[in-house]
Amino acid sequence: MNVLIVSNNAVSKVLNNGKTQENIFNSFQKDNLYQLFVRPQSSDLMDMDFCDSYFLIHEKEMIFRRSNCGSIFTKNDCQHISKDVKKYDSLVRIRSGFSLIIREMLWLLRLWRTKSLSAWLEDIKPQIIFFDAGNLGGLHILVRHISNKMNIPYVVYNSDDYIINPKVSGLFSYFHKSYISYQYAKTYKESKENYCINKYMCDSYATRFNKKFNVLTNSVEVESPQKYTIKNVTVISYFGGIHLNRWRMLARLSKLLPANTILNVYTFNNLSSEQNKVFADAGVVLKEGLKGAELNKAIIESDILLHVESDDEINKSLTMLSMSTKIPEYLMAGRLVLGFGPEEVASMRFLKDNEVGIVLDSLDADEKIEENLKRLVLDRKSIAEYSFAAHEFASNNFDKQVISEDFRKSLFKLLINK
Image (cartoon, rainbow, N blue to C red; front, side, top):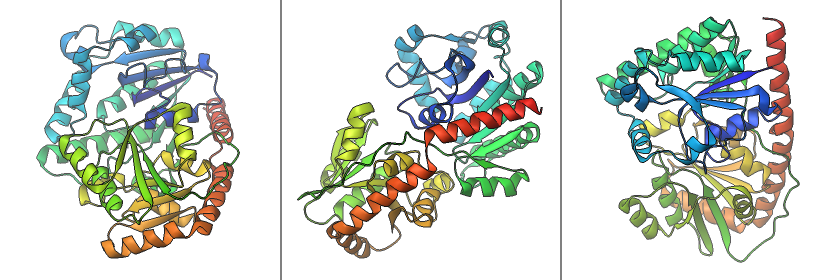
């Protein structure tokens, strides 16, 4: 069964969506996996050994190489991503309404309909498409085109919500949200199966589109629990991006920590001078982002693993239905997971509903949060109990082998019955 993965970002062992894709396809053979993606990453972030072949359609080439704007992406390409490509991608990440509309207009020209793409598709002979949908309407058009041209079905996966809860400001942002909502509706009409990263998103999308949505969560390797040992200093660690105003939440929490407690923040993000100053004033211990064995070691050496979400209205709307991919990793480590943010967003709801972590509502007064933190840090017995429960829950619900194999069987069944 040859699967074509279409997404904005490429598979990765480090970046969130890329990691989720790798876990989903863990039980598949490499020579049955192919990926078409839009945003290239350097060799330290992208996993070039996961799929049999990769095809890049980069928007910069749509502008400067209109007649041939897509090509097979190799390890050599990954190791030599040019500075101008990186600069362009940094501009794409600026989600102003105007820039998003210009980007969609570029995709509407359908410059990606090239001989090189057709030849690659004929060579790999995909039997089904896995579409990791995002906020680019042009990719929806591309997926439907490939599906119709090659007479193959596609399934849709959503790890983030771009069309129901996100608040927009300005005319261009409103038009873009309306446009991608229209593209999502067209895509779902022809999709064979639909998946979301958590049940909250599944329920919302099922109501919106009157179709069934299945939970396909991030998953992790089942590992033996690491014993929790009491130390003189309580170490709280945060791993991940500080965007979406998460950095302000981290600084606020750090200021409220009791004595003999430190907050380590591990991130790959480059901080501005303002962010560095705020972190320093708040006592945040800033560290370089980690991966692999070093990441696992830092997680195990922590007493409490922290996840934060911003409570300002715009960013809260962006994360309302999105569950952090780190949460399964945190739980499997057998450590207490602490959530700090608005209680109604999906990540916090998940921790509370399943009683696998402790959530501090950021809308509470600082005095109340400070008192709850002090009580939590001093209650070592509860930390140990939550640590055990976290690992047990993760082992029963986030087993990468089980989730990936069940998904593989569902795709195979879909192909048989198409």
